[in-house]
Amino acid sequence: MEKDSIISRLKKGSHCLVFATNNQHKLSEVRQILGDAYEVVGLKDIGCTEDIPETADTLEGNALQKAHFVHEHYGYDCFADDTGLEVEALDGLPGVHTARYAELFGEGATHDSDANMNLLLKNLANKSNRNARFRTVIAFIFQGREYLFEGICPGTIISERHGTEGFGYDPIFQPEGYDRCFAEMSAEEKNAISHRGRATQKLAEFLLNVFNEK
Image 1 (cartoon, helix red, strand yellow):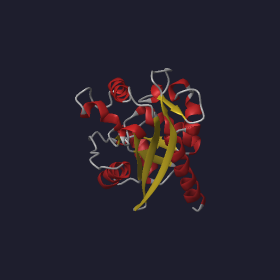
Image 2: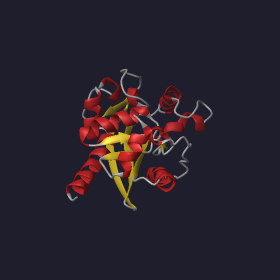
Image 3: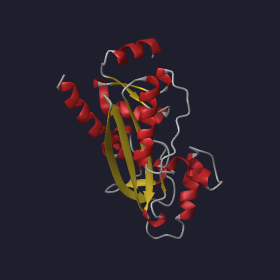
Image 4: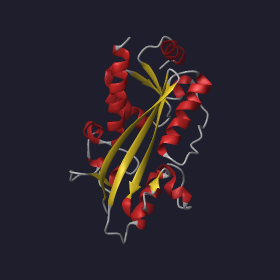
């Protein structure tokens, strides 16, 4: 996508939205969920190359931090998300540290999915309680106001990896009511029930109401 063309559409207030992420997996998921009604662009598309800080101790705080950064530095309405995998037997960990779980314990780098899963499975090796949930919070800065949308998907952590689809912890997370993990589902199946899918649907309903009023 051409940066100048994108910026022009953003300034006109069209259905072009900035998603404060460089994660192509997240961009693809959100674009699929929102469909053709909205054009979703990432940080690279608006020329944002900064490493936006995520220093809050909650998902809500991190999502707001990223959305406000783009709004304040680039002037666009923007939405951002933060997602945590909360495991009951580990007192809610990795939670806000989900993407850098292994890094925190010196066993991997940030966004090292293999290391994150290895550490989680090791820490659950002697636990009978495998209950967990994914929780996504989307923060949307729109016309100077903050809006939050939450999506939760309960499930369990299985003992070994299955499937090749998705990303992150998808090969070891089995959503409640299913006998397959996220990594064994198509993108459409996962988006229909996932934490990010549920949060994005709430964002979509908000956007529908906003644009219908114009």
